[in-house]
Amino acid sequence: MAELGEAAEAPIISASHREIAAVCHGAGVQYKPSGAGGGDLGILFSRNPDRMRDAVMALESAGYPSFDLQIGTHGIQIQAMKKEQ
Image (cartoon, rainbow, N blue to C red; front, side, top):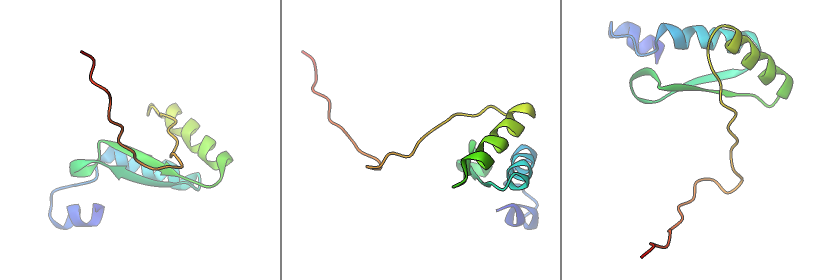
């Protein structure tokens, strides 16, 4: 995506996302911007909890907040709620 933005002279990946990616890759963690037009947020991926912790700590030290989200074993589900009367 970054190369496409550069070729089009319309950056898709922001400087902040590039900085975050560099920190993550330096910690051995994969990083992906997520959202329209370059990313509203970024997602870190790792099978190694120590590397993930190190990356999160480095990002928080650099001023980037984090949220601990877990992937559910059932994936995305829709539940109908009974309408109160």
